[in-house]
Image 1 (cartoon, rainbow, N blue to C red):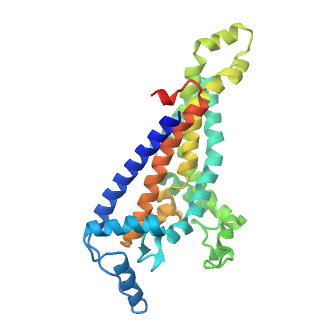
Image 2 (cartoon, rainbow, N blue to C red):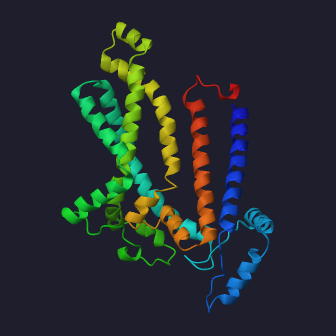
Image 3 (spheres, rainbow, N blue to C red):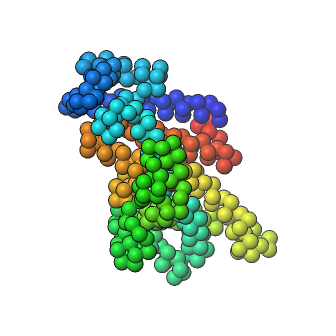
Length: 329
């Protein structure tokens, strides 16, 4: 098994390096000019020269890689937060992204699995048909449609919430530049403004988990060992709880693990609609403002999250299902 893990990690690193190299080259060939700021011009020019932006592309790439490994320096924000390290800019955006996506998973995982189990037990009955239609509807509709509908009904129509977007740190009484600014995201007022994006993010996750759970449990219920359990005197409910659910959850658990890793990435569209100052919103702003270093770091971050989610899912199968022998693949 460890042989397989090492092999996957090495393959992930090679893939990560190739993707990052391609992204670096594509970003650097775009037109780029030195920012102008009368108060900070001397610092801008010094930083510009230190990062090698006036040098040939291979030299720039070497400086970029060297700075990452020796100084943990991923460049500087030139527009969003001028002359602030890109890592600091990204770090400030992680908490709201993680919280909104984490809350949505807390809601969607139990609901999705419960609906999937219920649909599988009621297979081909009217309850199953209704759930299947709703699931197909939720899966087919893009998340931004949910966002607009949630905004319309909860805020504009019913007025259940005071704001259509997320409150800012200043709105809840904290200084955005203070060391304790992160505590603003744990206030009741801020949580209330998170309800709409949480709901919008939950629809797709609930539908996906419900469909997957139903498919796995339906297949498990038709296995021979389920018939054997019934012949031993177990009721359908007992056989389902003791045998079917346990085996059906094997492919579902890695999917849940992947979802929890993916919360770091956030949702670009949802963050834009609800004005969430998260990682996805930062990615869009870095493109619009031509803040290339922030855009490059954000791209690296997304690539790393995607690769880690894939490898964690693969490895988790070996721990969850003892029948899998990854080292023999």
